Length: 406
Image (tube, rainbow, N blue to C red; front, side, top):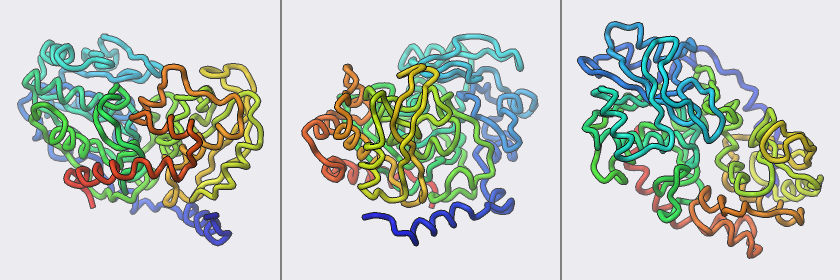
């Protein structure tokens, strides 16, 4: 069903409503609660923290710098995920082992490490408690939640306590959407069977991992936010946005990412090398027919503009390509995963050059062969989405037992 003119005007009005300072101050992240209590939850412990550039305070100070200066907490090590603690590495990279110039603290690399090797790193660091504080974006294939999982598993093996400082899911925690991973497709972009858009915070995910997936639970504590509601988007938090990775420049990117990241599994550009990654999609010889075809579907809350761009790196580097730009007009109505499927279906119909990556990366991203094989067989958007509803309902049933916020 198409959006009516009234709906479009209403959504534009909603988007223009300012967020007052009073509204912003209602939300406090886990670190703020921890610090306000004088770090009592960490008293007498040697602390190692898993974090990256997103581990900041409301005034944009990094929590490692804050904790390092505070005599109430004994911070002795830092553990960096993909892209590194200070965020200098591109996708698929990390910073390695070094001493942080700002604090002198040893920084250990966790990227692509798990199980006993990661447990050995925790043991060698000499810490008693592992703290996790990284901003997630709400998608199963964003690797930081699997860094969380791997670190929890390794902490259990090493006999360490684990504390998660919670932050908002920037695209809300209203509901889970999309296909659920099948275990035989487990990789670092999906270790366990959760939905593609999980609709949970990192503290909720930690509880889910501990209760459902770890072979033995780790001693886990969560420091929750106050004032966060499941319907809140990031721009109502009052917190500065720090790109959690180089191709996640804004909270708008996070809004579309759980759907358009699927284009990593195709020969089309997902917008890497542009200023709007995952909002711009395209390839050579694609023209305005794609935008017209997907607009014809009348997907709720979104419109598509015919767009042309020249990526500075990644696919089609230095070449002008055609495609679409996604414009979310009503984010409360927008379904990123369904939209991503619609974009895949229509791209295949209007562009003869459409192809999946030869390694079937799309299966790792979506968690099974279903999306690829159904689209190849000519299935439409509704048919593909219907295919995962039973497993999604089962995941939602499990998920609700671990939710911490109303």
